[in-house]
Figure 1 (cartoon, rainbow, N blue to C red):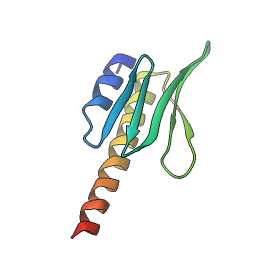
Figure 2 (cartoon, rainbow, N blue to C red; figure 1 turned 90 degrees about the vertical axis):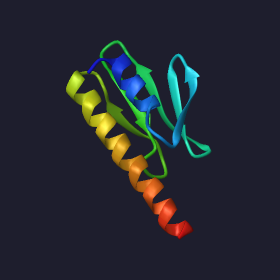
Figure 3 (cartoon, helix red, strand yellow; figure 1 turned 120 degrees about the vertical axis):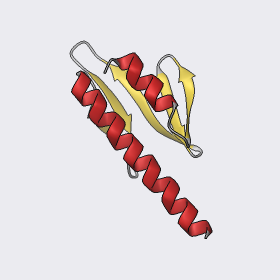
Figure 4 (cartoon, rainbow, N blue to C red; figure 1 turned 30 degrees about the vertical axis):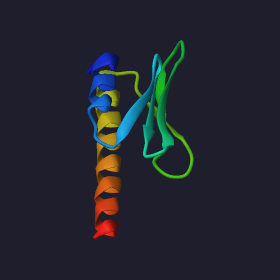
Amino acid sequence: MTFDELVASLRQIDGQRDGGKHPPNFHFRPKPFLHFHNGTDRTYADVRFGGDFDPVTASTPRQREVLLEQVMAHVTAKLASRQRQRG
């Protein structure tokens, strides 16, 4: 998975929106949720799975796939929880 493919896949996940095109900066609900850092030796995303941002390395195709899986699982769980609360 390329970086561009990762970003395109992230943009398809319901419940989040991309607040910036370059670099991508995703919000989930009204809060910042995920943004990227590109260094000389690695690319990583800061992702808010809990209260604070956690760095998740996204330099290799497999790391990007894992990041996408984690984001999809988190967003899906949060949306399902929200629907259960609404009854």
